[in-house]
Length: 364
Image (cartoon, rainbow, N blue to C red; front, side, top):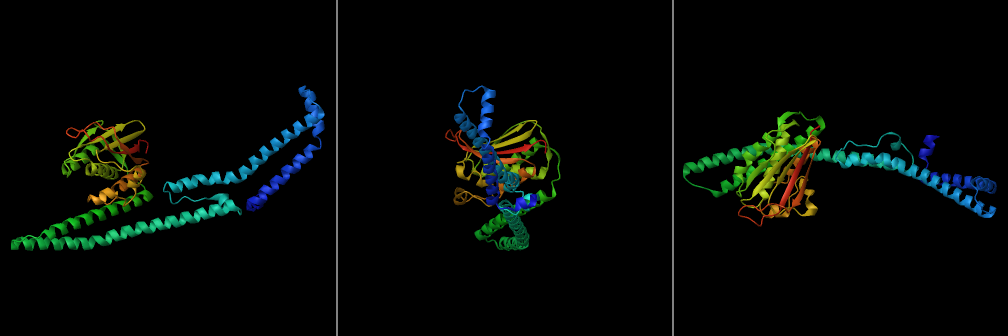
């Protein structure tokens, strides 16, 4: 009987319930006058039988309507409420999320919706897997010709050095090869993070403060625009996680800030520690990001038009890798524009920029 009811279209369910409710009201109405008089005597209400009967009819109709609305909404909203967590899981990137159980086997519109959702989720999962495999395979295949190109470039430079000639095109070729090699490395890193998300992370305790300081010491001297960095945080902060992935995430945050901050400005790096989480802020003095694109900068291969026109060295993978590393640790990374900087010495107008915040829960 339950399966038959689940397979009925919603129209027939609501029709049957409406008919049952109308019949109940009609049957109850036959004794409305007697019930009304009893109610009047018990309550001591001074009403004539006519108004009392009308009052009782009104009460019966209101209660029946409420009951009918409750039942009908339960029939429609109940399964949708059970399906909602699965939809939210898929929206968070959990591509294995599926509607299971009785809701996926129903014969009505709800069951059809659940099966359509499962089909869509399966297609999305296959498409993402094809994309990951394609990026992984292309990256691996490109490494061999790049290695041969680097070898040929080294031989050409050696021959030119022996002949006493110089060729600027070789320098540009070397730069292009280096950029291709960097892009392939980032693509492979992203594919590795996808795999790590499926197989689980290897975690061990490490000093988060020391990791951040190491990143700053390595990247700050190479800033082409003369920018500097400051660190504000505890001298030591032990965190349980994958140090390699976290270092890559921090490196990308710092590199992004140094690349886009104003020349000779100061990038502020702040670490806050609480019993629940570690919070790392990296704040630059650059032009910021249009509000509508603040979320897009964490998408793979996304680059702002200004980054393209100004000849930026990135490929739109750095912050995407940062977000992946954060999510694998149960954390998150966000970006907001800020306009409350203290003026940078020598640059009193530099009062804007972008703040990228990495939050990692201690419990993970």
